[in-house]
Image (tube, rainbow, N blue to C red):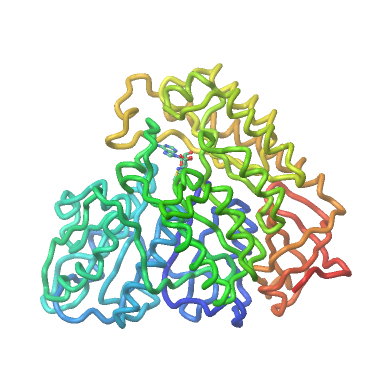
Length: 512
Ligand code: SAM
């Protein structure tokens, strides 16, 4: 799902989309990251996007917190690492906690319950939680602070977590979130070392209340888990089997989001287009897209992440038929070499992938394309890598999220003997990223002089700049005012860099 280095400090929820906002913007960060899903989102207590506080790095010599349990948990703090799915899971967890009467706080110092929602897609991401946990040491008796670890690292480490981090009282994977209320009850009675680690579930995590952080784009899960067995990927082991939500529940949630003031919805799933309708309506994924786009009040619908294997032409037809479906598709390639794709167990060849791309390019509206690529997968030869570069040149993506292969526990590729040296992975990554940078500059400069509709997501008072996002997911900075935030405006592109555009308000604004 994009490179998804999203990190959220959850405190209070921003108000509904129309509510006043601060003048410092995540969209500003988005502009510099300029990447789909690559926003480091921080939410402050007044609900505004801004530079959040993070607990300092672990310092084993200076324990700054004590840990104990028992008693009513009144306040909580959640920090989230990883993909949009994790971000949205945390939004739902926050809803569960608030429905119990708990209050979100600005920092872990003030919280009775501290939760880390973790990501294990790459080793670096997985290590982050252990560095965070270093600030909590068992200490003064009577001090109340309960530490819980959620998400993929929790699932992956399971009971071992308690040995590695004895300050942790709760370890719960995403497939067990429905059990959270029960687990919280037990934590309040003083029980320690509680786990929710079952993967054997057909349930989705449904909540009565969800505290969404992004005041503009509402995430909406349509499918959980993953049944693919890509040889590099840990997700099926950490998120459990695929579970699709019925179309009536999804549509009802979309209507509720409109009532709350949202105009943009992003449908989520590890493999979003593997969604199938368990209800009698038996909608296809493309039909679901159209039905969500038709909900009165919705102006933009995005979906992520699509798998090429399930990417069918009716999805493009749905985009053609519904102007509200954004002109943006994220279609992870992983490698341009058919040999490597076969070893990755991706289920398509280079030629089959390109066929899908050609189908997308034939759409009536120009659809923006982005992808994920792994370099240095086991046994990737120089020739294989050249194939990836040549495919990038042929497709000309608008964004590429590229990663060095990171061996993951319990995956088929773990322990492969034909590992590529880290240095060589780094060299390939740099080469690929430089190629893509040049493509992005060229593609963005081709937009000079064009008028583009943006949803304004932020305002940077220091620069007097508003920051908007186009339907193709491009970030555009332009002179504006705080009142612009939350409105749809038309902006004329005046200059372009690799990661963002600069523009000026067009005379004629689009619908507000
Ligand atoms: N479910 C999506 C799919 O299969 O297309 C991908 C979701 S994953 C959270 C996001 C991206 O992380 C993947 O598309 C892949 O490029 C990258 N990734 C996954 N496992 C990786 C690994 N072991 N090492 C490096 N990158 C990895």
